[in-house]
Figure 1 (spheres, rainbow, N blue to C red):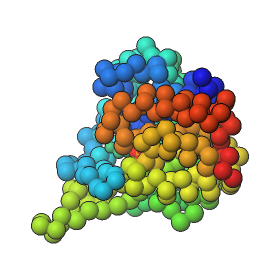
Figure 2 (figure 1 turned 180 degrees about the horizontal axis):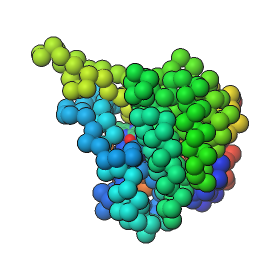
Figure 3 (figure 1 turned 90 degrees about the vertical axis):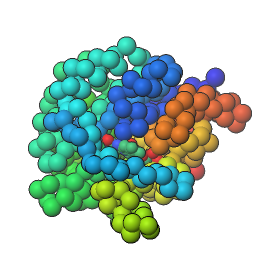
Length: 302
Ligand SMILES: Cc1cc2nc3c(=O)[nH]c(=O)nc-3n(C[C@H](O)[C@H](O)[C@H](O)COP(=O)(O)O)c2cc1C
């Protein structure tokens, strides 16, 4: 048995695997398939101040080695999450991470100030990939100053460890990473989905009703590994890596690039039992390679 315990930026987990936001809902469906207490953590669906229906369909499409989504943050709103969803998750011994989203800087603050009342939250993850309505729909996460404002506001409103989840849709992710670190982020998570498009050649129209969608899955893994590598060289706070992880070996690659923990997203749709399989696969891989403590792998490729 390898020591897999992970203690990063105030977030303690029994192993480094977290199921990614938007791919495991609030845990209910997954809990029928395996014991959620096996997970290092669960990052629940992006939650906004008010309930949201999300974008009209079609909003999911398959691509070679990946998928495109424009779900548009469908969620029941923070009140229902605090009163119905988080209490359900309190029966499991896993780190519950609340992913939050907003359409103005103030909205992030209004959600964050309600979080310390939740008994079983381990951390808050800020999705800064959403469109900033006041800035013409530009994502908060593409401007280092705006990203920093969101992080410092959230940080000032909660005692929870703050994870800034970065978008890859930028020229230089290290600029945004450094701004979030300076603004007080405890941990960085990367990457969110890659802005993409599919055109239906029969209708001659974009396939997704929203036009664009976010690409995820194996197709984006090398891009994500590159961004984790670059970010690990630019900041000193811990990194949670993700993007296309489908196997224990993929996870090892992210750890070697400099991530201290990792999330799995799209694979949960393809194989809903992937999480426990990757955790035991990682333990086996470490045994086979003489790794006694998972920490030995972090950044070892640099
Ligand atoms: C259907 C779907 C919904 C998602 N919803 C969210 C969300 O609400 N908040 C968020 O930060 N990321 C969201 N993501 C992004 C994932 O958490 C993850 O960053 C991305 O999919 C890359 O990981 P993967 O390649 O393992 O899927 C979503 C992804 C998918 C596929």
